Image 1: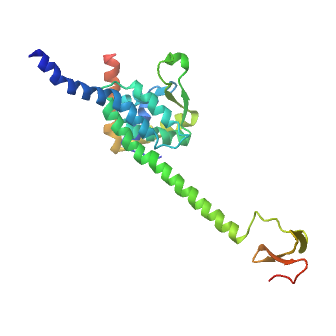
Image 2 (image 1 turned 120 degrees about the vertical axis):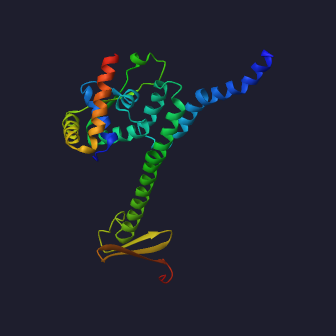
Image 3 (image 1 turned 90 degrees about the horizontal axis):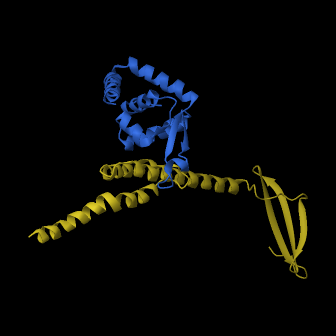
Length: 112
Length: 144
């Protein structure tokens, strides 16, 4: 998969909570990537087998809204996304991306 | 005076209702049609709309239109082209070597159809089985 700023941002956001379920809206906010770019990235990661998906249970929606699709990182995904982020760490092109992401994460934690 | 202000605000209120209320789900329903019928993105986007705050919805819809045109419609067109090419390839293949045709067990078969005698000959040519049929009236001379 091609390494772009948006891909790295999404990978970073996913790897912040590697064992949790990830939802589209929350992920796009965390990653700071607009949804028009994020869904295609998630689609490619899914096709690569790095992510698995599932649908929200009816008990969670309360029957009031349609169930949402969530993503989980697979074993392959953990390895590949980890390797991608490790490569990005060494790449000067992504220094600002990862630096900004780390700052945002610290800020979010501090505000929470 | 306040009544006049209220009437003047009515179109603005209506427009706001359309832009933030009615239009987003309606437009999204049209946009998801661009994705293939079995694509889970259809249901995913419809559900995601509800998770968005209403203020963000119009912009989000515009983004989905862009993605739908590039990804959904692009995928559909590529799939259609692939299917058409596959059909043409199969047609050409069947013309060259008709796989649907069962070659006769014997080289010459004579059968009778509606008072006509049909003589079927099977022979191999250009790596394919070719069948020629000659028919004639039972009482008359053989047809060409």
